[in-house]
Each structure stands twice: as C-alpha cells, then as structure tokens.
Length: 398
Image 1 (cartoon, rainbow, N blue to C red):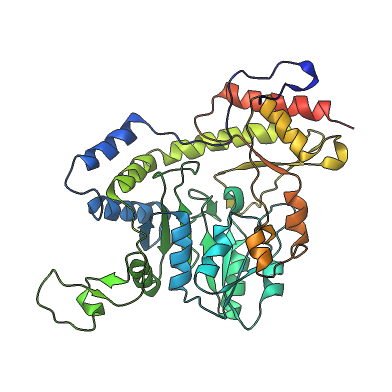
Image 2: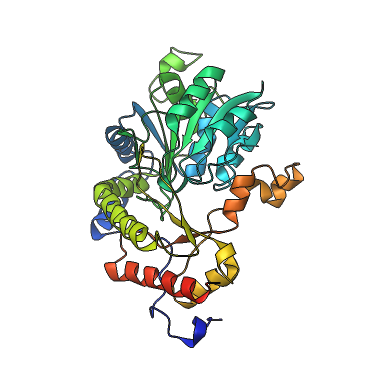
C-alpha cells in the first residue's frame, strides 16, 4: 500500500528512486553478446583478460575472478589456511558474508567494534580481541572508505596475522595514494549490480603473494590443476591430463560475465567521478541539517563511495527510524539499511553470540539509513533526495 506524503503535502517526486542500481550501456550489451556468439561461454580468454585488467588497475600482482564477492572471501579464508579452532577478527557492521566466510572454513568469527565517526573497524578494538587462536583480520572498507590500513597492517605483522581486506565497496578508492587491491595480503572485490562496476554477480581476489595466488586458483576451481609442477604423478601422457590436488569449489566466473566487467571497467573512472560529485553535493547540503549525522572520512582515504549513509539523531527528532524510512518512501525516495549487526541474526545467536559485543556498532545501527547514490542519478534526482531530507527533518524536528 502506498503511503501518503507527510503533512498532506505532495511527494517531492512522482517516480520512485532507489538507493542503488546498475548502469548497463549498449556497449556492455554488445560485449556480452559478442561472447555469447563466440566459441567460449565459460572457461575462455575473457576471464584471463579481466584478471589482467584488474591487476593493471590496482597494481596487484595477481587477480582471480570468481562468481561472487562471497566466494572471493571464502577463497581468501581457504588460502589463509583458516580452519577449526582458528579465530578471525572482523566487523559486525557489514554484510553477513564478511563473517560467514570464516564459518565456511570451520573457524570462529570474532567481532571488533567500529570507530563511532567513520563506522570502519577500530584498530584498537582489533588489538583487544586478539588471542592465541587469532589467525587473520577481515577488515571491511565500509561504504567505500578505506580502513586504517597502516595500523591494521602493523597489528597483523606484530602478531603474525593474515590481513584480508573486504573491499566489496571500495574498488577505485585509494589509501595514501595507493589503489585498493595493492596493499593487503588479499583483497576481495564484489561486482554485484549496485557496486561501482558490475558483472551481474561476480567477485575477485587480488594478491601480491605467489603462494596465496596458487591456493586461490585451486580453491575456486575444484582444487584441480593442469600445472605439471604442482602435480604429484607427473610426467603424464598428454595435455588432456589434470589432477585434483586439494578440495576446491566451482566458483568460476563465466566469460560473458568477464566481458561485461571489462566493458564496465572502461567506464569506472567516469562512474567514480559522478559518485564523487553526488557525494560532494550531499555533504554540502546535509552537513548542517538538524537531526542528521554524517559519516566522517579519514584524510588518508580517497574514497569512491558505494553507499551514502545518513545517521538519524533520534534525540532531536519526534519520529522513529521506521517512520522516517516510510516517510522517505512516501516521498518516492526508497532508502535501505546497511547493515544489521551480523551477530544479531538468529543463526549467530544460536551459536552463542549475544547483543552488547560491539556497543558503537549497535548504537550506529539504530540510526543509519542509505540514501540513493549511483552514477545514473541526474542533478534533479539528487536535488529531490536533498529536498525530501530537508522536508522531513523539518517536519519531525522537536
């Protein structure tokens, strides 16, 4: 049922605008169509070309394309050797995959709290959660802002931990001038449709480490190799021969997905530029709006935002978040919530996790809301979002 606009007024716009969407062009469609008309639909040259393209873009030595960002995280945990009895520290303010990937390997996710202003994982909290069982840190670049990578790197080096960067939000961001993908032990991207570039579904793992790379290749393709140097029973009869030398998964990306990704990569700089323009307008127009708190950014991060998150200061408003969310929907601005703290979910509760583990993350969650941000937004669209927020914060002001 459609909600009426508040106070009996008209909505700020007639057509609904969503928090995110892909931008697929005729060039993208042709790139996919050309592959579908050719000899390889999967296991062909486009995947290799896509991996090379990501290496060129990020400066990483190796890239492995997979079928989702979740698969990328799972492969990274497998390559890191996560297993039963191992603990991996991550943030609760993320999509569940950032912790689920640890469970897939038999490990135990340990949740560190977030910085109350940036919403990224707090290095001090990471340090407090380290035990003799800790094996890795999965640090999430929340909304696209890069984590405090130098501090996390130093902690990982001090304790002998693997630094996995969950960069599902942050392709195109930079930390102290270095592209995301070039500085963690392993970096995981997502190419879901609402991300900066898309392959439909898809993901990638990037690394500079040759041994991790070998393990990642095996992990995403059944543990099977054609490399004679890795085989146990070589020499063999001919080029058709292969060996399964570890237990892997079928996480391969198709050639037509890789073709879409490469076509999207041709536009990534334009996509990022437009996102930054929209973020700049939001920052300027919303910074002094009573009832709203904006996410802070560290100067080290040159951020390509995947999400723009406002935080309602409910102490200054007469409404609940649900009421504000529904009122935005009535204005034809469809928002989203990112994210429910992972350990609040029933599955994690049944594993023994309880509320109260990360007070900052839990408090932040109560007021956050993602507003529309994607390159296809027109200036008029952006203005409508801003006007809706101004209208509602004024209406609900105490």
